[in-house]
Length: 488
Image (cartoon, rainbow, N blue to C red; front, side, top):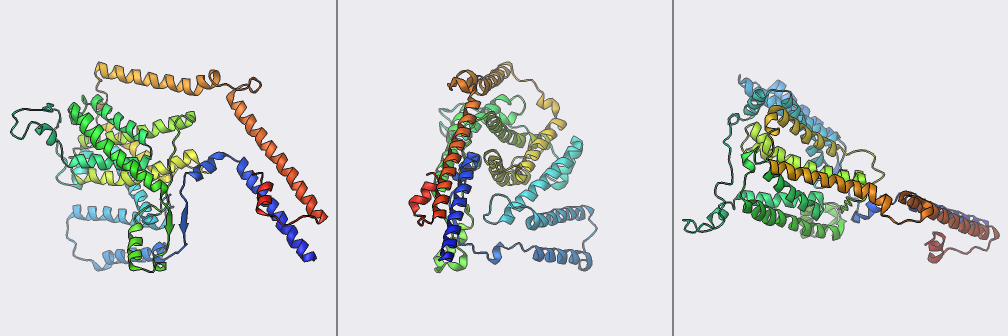
């Protein structure tokens, strides 16, 4: 009998402790629960197969065997100094990436494998080191270095404009009256569409992506005096790019996001699936997201959030512009593999960086800026510094008067709206009880009163249940009693 009472007392005490812990959680910053509510529920059976292990010792042994082969076995490698230097540089990059894939810290993504995302981080570090090296060179030496990577480079590029004949309808044209329109329908149309689909998956906000698309078209208009490559016909800007390619890519991305937001994520180990069809489907599902987090940017929530969203949008636009300025200054033609390699690195890196940045803004338990966000910010800034160092007169070329005036008006409007939204409106246009003073005092006082009431109610209920326990009149808790003691 005493043992039963002791057991009942322990269960009651644990229930009160559970209620107290839950109450403390409810009184904490609600941003934590909000960030958790944006994440989808995931069921995982916890299978840890050979595929998911670190393999750090295996990779180390293979790397040492390769170095032993180069040092002791390989003999006839020729006397080509350029070949040896290139091979040595490639070997350094490979060894650094192998170390990063096995030892670097994991990011927020797990599929298809965490090592893949560690590799993306390592490649970003290598690219940043390459940018810093180029920054310390002269313009001529930098072009020679790029030509050293590929002998076909290092030659001036012919400036190309896309605004020679801007007539949309040309009667009597041998290829048809809409020949000027159809001649623009090339591979870059698909690249535009796919690029904005990826940006929508990265940003996960329809209107921010639309503003980015609109902003880049306006930047192309504004910078035609610096790079002839920005000159396009009006229908190329607004019909083909903004309305067709960009908007269609954004809409497809929005549809994909809706599917990912409502999808149920159930994961089973490959060997726990009985059918062969299920095993094949599981292999393909390895290349799909493990879970999903919805983004609710709320740019007007606070001044910090507003400035952060503006900064993210500016980084996107600057990274896009860097593509054109770098290839113009370093003489790299658009279809070259260096340009494609840069985009292949920036794409996956941006996915991780925006995810880390959003968690840094939304999750109060995240106190450190993400590693991928850090390195990609450094990459974009270093690219800007290279452009400014090698061709500052190009950047300082004066804007046309009407362009400069329009951007000045837009900047003034942005500053005025920011001051009104975050300083004037809370002080003069928000109705709060007079005895609280400012809206911030009203919110903090309300939160304090609510927490005090909850604490008083909880203490009263705890005393009541403790008294019933001591008198031996307490009955086992039902679900209704469990909800009652938690104040729900």
